[in-house]
Length: 343
Image 1 (cartoon, rainbow, N blue to C red):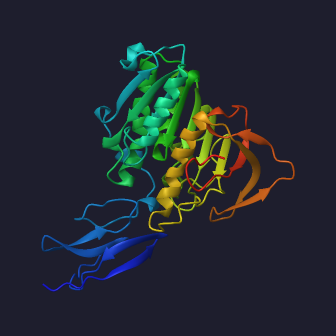
Image 2: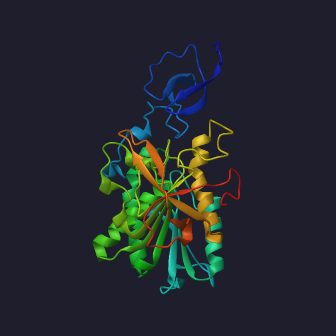
Image 3: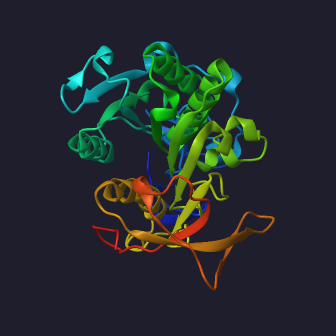
């Protein structure tokens, strides 16, 4: 069988991806998929670089599909934890100091607790000697498809909340740091705790909260919101494509105006992922370095595109971990294009 390999760029939903075209593959494929021959069988293969699809089925754009929690497949065994204290290192949950503040860190879509930013944040907090640290690993339920991971966030949040309550930790002394879909896991943990105890989590820090929860058909109560903790702060670094566009917290930072991050333009095929993950680096740096951010006005058009307007006398607040928890509003943070990012 003769195949003509044509390497080209395909611009699809703001993504540049490489693909191979099979001239003798005639199967009709839906949106975001191409015909390919796998083991001598014509199949539809996903070409969106944001996900990996099953080569035997038609590819569906996960960002156009609202979450459906009734389709959740996560089980309690899909969510595991690692517990740390400064004095004991990795330990059993019973060793956590119930009088200390607790930092809980959770990854996002197709993530794992072995990611560099999570390990770096853990080590930075342990050096301060005043925190319990809990790492939440929900990898089996965080993929392989974005749609499946989105459907699982409520259930994973419930399991996390039950672990918090079972350990008899004080909700008001807890901060959950969540990346992307992990921020919505945090939100559902907060919702569950409030519903069961009438108490409220102390803080939720959302790093690039997933825009998956912003699509049409997804109800506001399905995602992170201000009532899920006493203080909700949000870092936006890729509103153009992957992250949440609108303000969602008590305090929202739009880093370099939130769309594309400097230094991420080098490889256009990875631009959005690079910008998306900048929130991780920025947060870790903020644990050991204090920099100021400046208040700014933001408005959104009917397509949720943001317009930023400078203020004549803007307030300034510390960015990241050590922000004053009474801070409210929208803030602009400018960074370098290479690490260290904070200036």
